[in-house]
Length: 319
Image 1 (cartoon, rainbow, N blue to C red):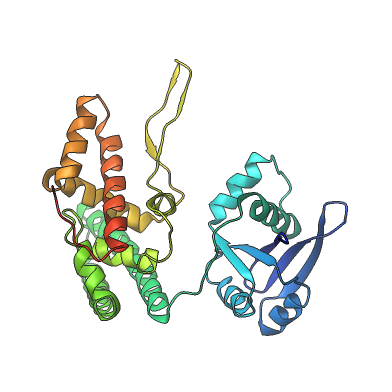
Image 2 (image 1 turned 90 degrees about the vertical axis):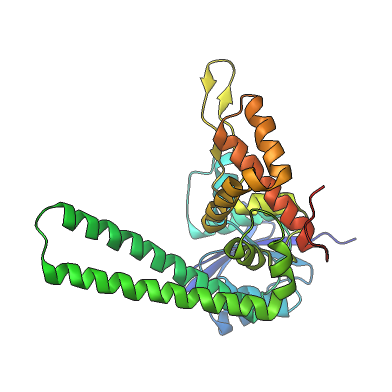
């Protein structure tokens, strides 16, 4: 069987650099193309049929190229930029140029052979964009409320200034509610059965169920729950060395902050109402594990339960 050729792509808004395996000094032929339809067409002429194109998830800049390559029958992988960064650090790579970045992405592809990317359905892309805007609004709300409190507590408050802030808070709050309603509408339209079944897991509410459906493409994106756990970034990271270094347990943050926060809140509820999670929490705390580690374990348990429900036609049942 012919082996795949792993091609690294470092992409930006205007252009993308490519590293294609070749018999050169550093092992790669380096090319640069415009990040548009004409550049895509030129790039494809340099690819072999078995090419596996690997690129970072750089905002939205990768999307059109990834779709084009997929439509031309190429294998495409889109990976977390942090993954590439850590891979580069492990190899003590100091120089950072577009050419070097493309080469390290190609090396990562060759070593790890990442999972294949597929274009998302239109409604999933719409939901993704809505959640991105919603996250932006929530950040604005937090800043405005903090500023409002600061102005009030200063003892020197201007009536017009406070009215402006209050109106802005009201407006953004309404926009968040509007996006919530539209996200719920799209979820029920395309994934209502899955949406309802996920909520049979005690501790998983509407928002968590909706976000799980979005990040997993309706549970079609990941082969097992460990991949999902790694993607979300809920794996506990323990910093210990010998007998003298005893660091705190932290959550690995190579994942989705929104889902991580939601699952942590779900875990706090599940430790009292979800039988399996409650038993796990009690067992871990009795062994002397700290509360944060126990909640991380519960969040992972919830992900595992959700993965099982998402990949079956069952509802969750406690035994």
